[in-house]
Image (cartoon, rainbow, N blue to C red; front, side, top):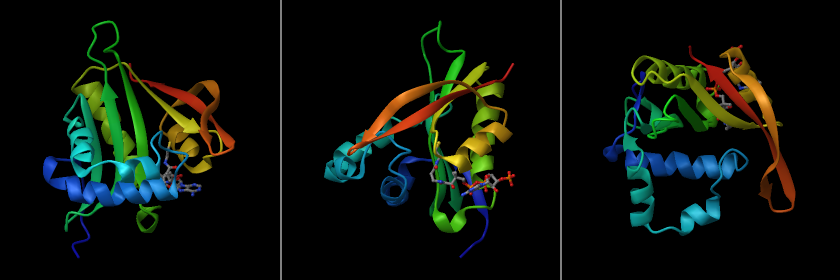
Length: 175
Ligand SMILES: CC(C)(COP(=O)(O)OP(=O)(O)OC[C@H]1O[C@@H](n2cnc3c(N)ncnc32)[C@H](O)[C@@H]1OP(=O)(O)O)[C@@H](O)C(=O)NCCC(=O)NCCS
């Protein structure tokens, strides 16, 4: 297998590889995503593809992948910008996930950094927001290191069966 990893927006042809990592992410890290495994698996392939296609709009709304030379997606993150003129100075990161075997190699750092650069340099976005579970030390630490600050806490942001997940809401100002 080619050991090079490319950081690039996912394309239509990456859909089968996306399904694999999405399944893994929903199983391994249910507190990270609003959608849950059973719901996602229950969707038809057409619905999954339609949802995926909404994120084929680089640099406004896209999925950024860390993709190896064989086309496997080792990590990914989502970006959603705003179209309305009063809101387009803001963007949002979501859904950061790196496969277990690929962790600790700087892939998450590269994915987040690339999103920040694109938002600032191409879209002239002024601030990036995100939410992270208050129990997720690894990603919380990563966001702090990359210059995000906490501006609030959403209590009971998610309910997973009978337990709640609180989330920090964080922002990084780019200008
Ligand atoms: C959080 C996550 C994305 C990090 O991915 P990664 O590619 O291993 O991250 P990096 O290699 O870029 O490491 C970033 C930093 O986090 C640290 N880190 C990574 N995993 C860690 C862990 N489990 N515990 C503590 N620190 C950790 C690294 O040491 C590194 O620190 P450094 O910059 O001081 O060297 C990955 O563990 C993951 O997918 N977790 C499950 C999903 C998740 O929590 N997503 C975030 C949702 S907000």
